[in-house]
Length: 276
Ligand SMILES: [Zn+2]
Image (cartoon, rainbow, N blue to C red; front, side, top):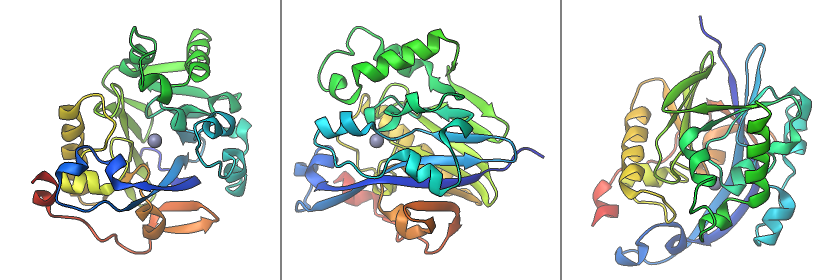
C-alpha cells in the first residue's frame, strides 16, 4: 500500500477586500460589489517518514512592504503542529507568487518541487513586467535559482509522483506553471487547488479570478477541479477560501485538519449565474 498522509491547512493571515477586485469582469455581472474575505494558507503533510509542505507563505517583511497584513509566522504555526523547520524534507511549490514561496529559505534540509514552466516564466524575458514583477519577488526568484543550482530542485514537466502517495501536475491558468497537488490522505484523496482556485466559487460557478496568465487554462483547471470534487472519496480544497476554516476541524489555533470534515460546505451550483 502506498503512503498515507495527514494533511493540515495552516492559516497565517486573513484579509478583507472587494469582490470586484478579486473576480475578473465582475463589473459586467449583475451582482453588486461586496466584501470578499480572504484567508492565507500553506499546507503541512506528514506520513510515517516524510514531512512535506505545499507552499510556505509570504515573507513578513516583503509582504508588509506590499501593505499585506502580517499574521502568524509560519514557523510558529509549524511548532503548534510539533514540526520544526529542520524537519521539513520537501516543499512542493504550487506556483512562484510571493505568498507561496516567501519562506523557502527557512528549511535547511528541504528539497523542492516546482513546475518547469513556472521556472521558465519567472526567469524569462517578461518577468520584469508589471504585475509579474509585483507578485514574483526578485529575492525569491534568486533563492529559487540558487537552490536549483545547488541541486535542491526537482522540476515537473507535466505530471509526476513527488513522493509515494503525493502527485503534482501543472494546470496553468493563474500562472504558467500553477500546479494541483493530490495527496493519498488518511481519509481518502485530498486535492489542494492552491491558486488554481483561490475560492471554491471559482470552480463551482466558473467565475474567473482577477489575475491570470491564460484564461482558457484557468477555465480548464476549474473543469478539472469540478471533476475531482465530484469523485467519490476526494475532497478539493481551494487556496484562499475562508470556507476551509468552517468546513474542517481546527486542531490547533489556525491549523485545520483536512481529513476531518465538521460541516459540509454550502456549494454554489448555479453555473449560469457567473456566466451571464
Ligand atoms: Zn496565493
